[in-house]
Image 1 (cartoon, rainbow, N blue to C red):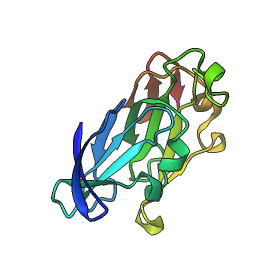
Image 2: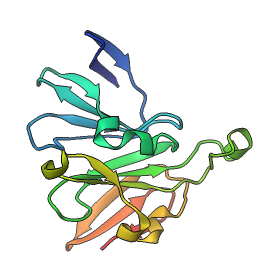
Image 3: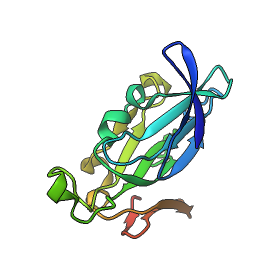
Length: 171
């Protein structure tokens, strides 16, 4: 994916590899945002359009996604309203490529948990907060080798699927 972004007073063009992308208007202000899952030691990106000029800035850190997502390798992500508050939350499916990554990097594992980020809405600056096991159930945090993600809202029952992993039932 090619993206233009504003950095240090100049407009640069970058090529950003990603393992899953989705776009949305997460602040409901008409501004496009694009979420991109990345490799381990890279944050999940949240590119937000500037001045509706198709120039994007990665706002993952100020939006609350950046630091929390750095350790995991993301293969799938999507925005959906997990708590039915009207705001699009973010779920990532994660899993490393290398089965024995722990031999090289002691803190990394092949099987990794999904991540769920709750969208706070405008009253709290439209930030994302990582959701814990208490708010969503333990199955979501069971490490798997996630290779993609999808969701469906059938009869007002939300089902999540992390491909090559397990089905998660949130409602």
